Length: 332
Image (cartoon, rainbow, N blue to C red; front, side, top):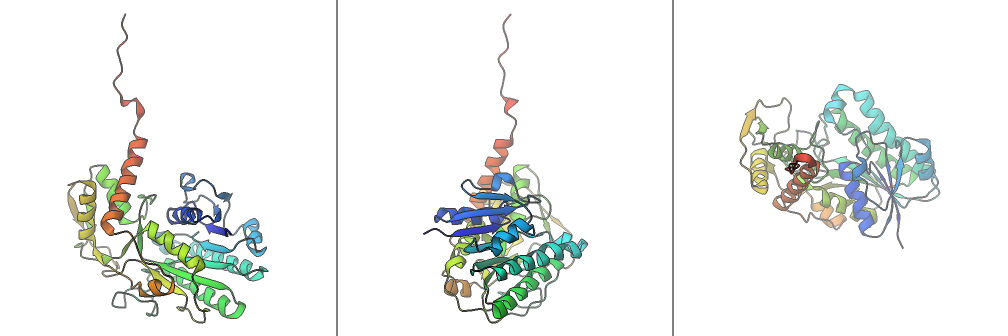
């Protein structure tokens, strides 16, 4: 019997892959997105599409009515720089919107499971030695990270006091097809776009800083696992939080070399000034996700980069003008 799945932010980079993954296992999927950052072309066929803000009354009423079995909550303000520039708006869109969703779930006659997309880089901060495990102290460096952690605290409260069924997935650095290379996007998408344009890759600082790069298809699979995993009742903040990454640190220099290899490219690599406050070492432990969710990443970095670059290259070809073909000269 198929489940009813709600994916908020389902037109976004990660959310659309999550919707794809649930469709692939035979579930009925409803996507909610206001297209403030999501793209219509990302929405998979076969879903019910609701164009609305997650805070809209018609969305909250459907949640409160008990229509859905699982709610994957990915709708968010995702730009760290915007959160620094306007923390009030960030809190409204990330904390208050999520709180409204939790309240709607509390009013529901049935207990849906909430799978919340949190962050494994921003919540731990710079004051621990990686790999970060879930019980590590949290000290976010940005309003964005503070908002994600705040929602996790609210989820723990609603689980303890109101019996809600909640799981938080703390993503590492997600990359893959459909990622936006404009604005504050992932470095993989930016590098792919620059290679296609024949432009140099810019590395800030010495390039030795490390991140944990996880393929978006593996992240989507983690959501499917979290939707049905048998996990103990949440009593504390970290009891039902799971890091989703690879557990492998990769330096920016190594990433640039790997993308060049995947693309068959040799554009120059230029070094810019280090960005103040940038984390130097960040990766996560995924032992708990392996044990508690039955999940582990299936896509290697090299394979993921090849698939990602191929997607960007195909999109660039599709966008190329079609009138560049030679034309036959008319005879008199």
